[in-house]
Amino acid sequence: MSSTASGKNDTWRNWGGNVVSRPAREVTPASVEELAAAVRQAAEDGLTVKPVGTGHSFTSIAATDGVLIRPQLLTGIRRIDRDAMTVTVEAGTPLKRLNVALAREGLSLTNMGDIMEQTVSGATSTGTHGTGRDSASIAAQIKGLELVTADGSVLTCSEKENPEVFAAARIGLGALGIVTAITFAVEPVFLLTAREEPMPFERVLAEFDALWAENEHFEFYWFPHTGSTNTKRNNRSAGPEKPVGQVAGWFEDEFLSNGVFQVAQWVGRAVPATVPTIARVSSRALSARTYTDIPYKVYTSPRRVRFTEMEYAVPREALTETLRELKAMVDRSDLRVSFPVEVRTAPADDITLSTASGRDSAYVAVHMFKGTPYQAYFTAAERIFTAHEGRPHWGKVHTRDAEYFAGVYPRFGEFTALRDRLDPDRRFQNDYLRRVLGS
Image (cartoon, one colour):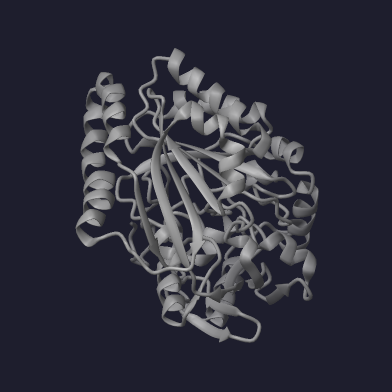
């Protein structure tokens, strides 16, 4: 992932390998007090500060030439409140560890993204989400936050306490302060039945509204250069548990989705002309299957093949048109796209800079294998997304700036005004925030 040494001028790289930075120093605080002291010290030294989780963002949102804060000692569950049905967790806790610990306690988050390598604060600060008709992003499940602000003070916020900070800081982009703890709403652990099956592209689009309305969690993957998709519906189930068998699970999730897929990506990168054929074979390789398990085992899957990604949220009613334009663009271009396009949804939420803020949204994610030139494809895709007033995922590749965001986020000025108040000296500034929020 990245170096853990605290010597001077270690190079930091993100997971996708497309962002590199050289912080002046690294600090690994063991307590909130130590973190606050590190922020005050940075101010004395005239340095900016950035916490960095697992580096799963494809943007340079975590890059800094100042003080890099590593949160790995700020991990674990602080408390579980069974009356309020909440769990308070330290910011550096990986989602994977949270999910396993909650399951042991007979609890679960309502919804989650499709990977769980990220820290809870990194995932929520960038707006990580899964798919859901009624349940929204991970950040939308936050009930309280603890934040170290630019002057080194510790701020707690919720709907009742500092509500204007709470409205923004759940997806705060690292611009308002450093999140040190998060309180999530949880519920008793439940079972989900997943039904995965191939479906023609045109049929998914024709029936999309019904598929969305009839399922708690609907998503699909379209394989460019083909008319094929793989659909996945997750719905609550009374049981019994019927997990994917070990052999079948290894074959489909490891061998096909990671092993063979990795080899196919290598071949496609070396010989782009083979990509459409590989896509046709890939789209047929995954057969229909149904299984029932606890939430994190259904929502998430391992992702070992490295890639670069762009994802935009468009208004849900604009999804089918957006996808038809994307397919037409790929079909008439000489692009060779070896990674499926992922489509998910989220209901409107009330978080200031959430990609689903104030509008029911559909997410379209385009990927390219690590090391394959992605600019031409992403530029063409982005042109389509922005024509539909798309909002890019804060942790994925995009070229938008503050002027664009002021147009697609009605409450954008609310966020920047709060930032002026909480971080007037721009202690948490970096090049990315300068571009997306203005200076």
